[in-house]
Length: 425
Image 1 (cartoon, rainbow, N blue to C red):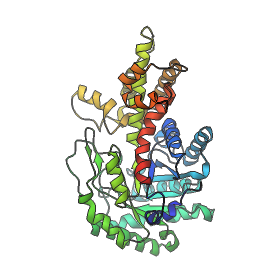
Image 2: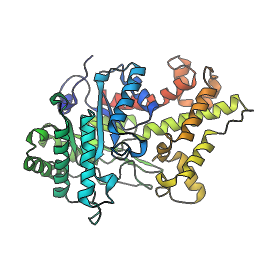
Image 3: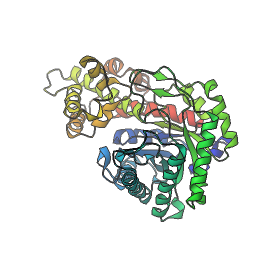
């Protein structure tokens, strides 16, 4: 089947078929494989996105350049028998954020190099985010400066793209909360106002035209807004359609555009469906998928401990605790409280900052050892019930085999399926 084109995303709601698309924001191979498995039987393309901090010309925290990331995705797709033509690669929050400690010109120079690398590697959905100030500037820039810098990056991307059939589509704007979730418990959010989103679109339109990028602006397909969804370390703000009604209706005045919703992780299925119905057609999910990965890995680790009580293998949680303590930069400033409270957050926070540590050598070795210990083992149903209870029904009806890798992929796939269901209606 030929998936619909993301360029026509605003028209999907008017036609038979999907009305939205999940955006998988993860570099973990098991997450990507599970997303491919869940998407394969559908009519949807698979949108996979990398962030500016995760993947860039300097390697990011994954150690991958955009071309490295593409190669990894293609390798996983080959093993999973997922058609490459159904994969859309995206870049998220592309801008000077990784280098904002530098002065603006130096940071923007690095950002230009980065977006050229994304475009040259065939990433065709590019989120332009230049809202943050650099050294000596305010924390957040005004709309005019943000849009001018976004247009500058779009120009670099256009120049780097040599294949007209792969000309990128663009996303403009940025959500109010920090990417990846809020830092503390949250009680409410301010939904983006209709006036604000209209201004964002108009200011970017002018900036693109001034940069002689009229054709590129025709490929702006979405604006990032805050529909009233977010998660913190401990809680989730669930989407309320009534609160976002005025924002949703703004799309009537913005032909060709949809809204992109960030931080939709942990939303219940009904809320995801309502988001898509209200025009928030791109649903970003990342930490929610790696949270399910961690949850399943810890469950499998407990199962292994039950099956092999005399094993000398150290628990996965203890290994991850040591890995995170050896390099605390990715969690220390985000988790507050007593030592015990911070320990709980390191492993169980919705912000899931443990996801930064799975690529570490000791973490990868520990996961490999766990899966090797359980390789070929048919895990008894009572242990699945105890430690991976959400998968028991699928095991009983033989939808999921009672083997470690199958259970792990199914746990992630269940979350992905909520997004697929919401987008297919």
